[in-house]
Amino acid sequence: MNKSLTIFLAALITLFAGFQPAIAESEPSSLVISQPWAAHTGKRTMSAAAYFTISNTGDTADTLIGVKSDSAKMSTLHRSYEKDGIMRMDHIPALQIPAGGQVALSPGGYHIMLMQLATPLKRGETFLLTLVFERAGEVPVTVNITGIGGPEH
Ligand SMILES: [Cu+2]
Image (cartoon, rainbow, N blue to C red; front, top):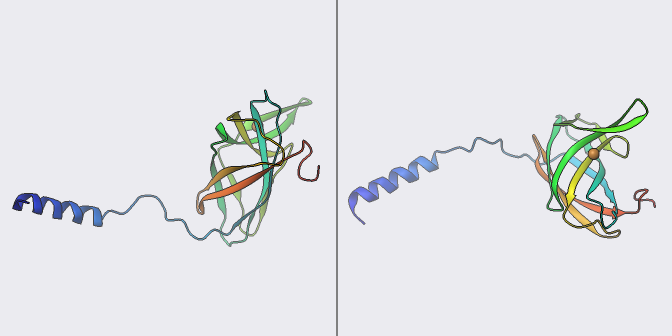
């Protein structure tokens, strides 16, 4: 190796050694995700909703800012609401989980919307979601596929 190349490489290594990633480092998660479920779907159904409860046992609020899943082309956070007697739903960009508090995703309210499912959801099987939180980072969730009425049905 010639001398100038050695100096160049040394400079490069020094540069990278001093490089700090811009993203915040994840801290141990104080979030607990309980009873994740989604109802099974028919063969031609293209979308589904997933539900669970997020509890924040820590003393700092955290915010759900994204969802990822290989089981659908698009997975987003949605909120259902009723207007003029019609159920509608909206995409919401983020959901805050207060310190020491909990937020439930349940039918008629918040849910994870899965659009363009890769395969129909079969009762008794599971699929993986990755929740992305501002502080806790990525939190994997295994969702149980249940009957239409939820975990008890
Ligand atoms: Cu939805």
